[in-house]
Amino acid sequence: MKNYIFLSFILFLIGVQPLVAQEAKYAIDENIRYTSDASEYAQERCKLDIYYPENKTDFTTVVWFHGGGITGGNKFIPEKLKEQGIAVVAVNYRLSPKVKCPVYIEDAAAAVAWTFKNIEKYGGSKDKIVVSGHSAGGYLTSMVGLDKHYLAAHDINADDIAMLIPFSGHTITHFTIRDEKGIPGTQAIVDEYAPLYFVRPDAPPTIFITGDRELEMLGRYEENAYMWRMMKVAGHKNCKLMELDGFNHGEMASPALEILLKEIKVLDK
Image (cartoon, rainbow, N blue to C red):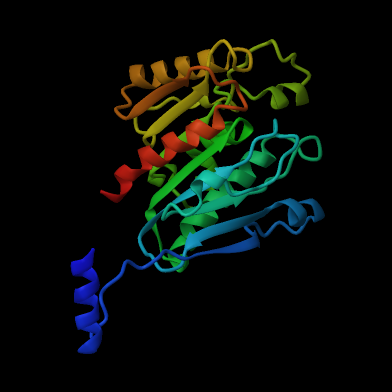
C-alpha cells in the first residue's frame, strides 16, 4: 500500500495520472412501444423498458417477461440483474381476459423481435440475446423460443436466441388458455399452445428451472422434467433441468436469477 501511494505521488509530480478501473454506468429508457398496433389496449400495455450499461459494448441482453398467470402483473427490472454488465429488457404484454390467446404470445414475440432489431443501437450484441421470465413469463419464453412462427412473422429466426431460461413455466397448455376454452385446470392439454408440442433438437440452449416439486404449483416440476426428457430424446444437445429444493413457486425466482447470471457467462467467453 505504501509503495502504491509513493508511486502515485511520483506520477502526480511528473504529470502522469495512475490508471483506475472505469466504473460501469447504467441508464434506463422506459415505456418504449414495441408494436405498431394502434388499438387503445395495445398502446397501454405493449411497452418495454431497457436497462443497459452506457460505457460498454457487445454486452448480453436478457429479455424478461413478468409472471401473473397471463391475467396480471407488470414489467420490472429484477434487482439481481442490475449492475451486472448486462442489459435487461422488461416487457409488458396484453392480458387475459381483455385479449385471448394467442395475442399475448404474439406480444412477447414482438418484444423479442424489437430487441433483435434495436439492441445494437444501445451497444449490445444480437448474438447474445437471452429470453427468460417467471411463471407466465416462463411459459411465454418457451413458446416464443420453440414455436418458430411467432418470431418468423417479424423476420427473426427463433434459433438466433442465445439461450432460453424459463422459470417455473408451463410446458403443457397454460391454465389461462384452458380457462378461455372452458377446459378445467386439472385437465392437461398439449396442443399448439403448449411448449411440449414443439420439442425439437435444434432449439436454442435451454435451461428449465423450477422450485421444489413438493412445494411447486401442482405438477409444475413434473411438466418441466418431462419436457427436458423429451428434448433429450429428440436429440437436443444443450438442455438442462434444475430443481431448487426448499423453494416454492414464488420463492424460486430469486435463486433462479443467480443461476441465470452464472449460466449466461458462457456467452462472454
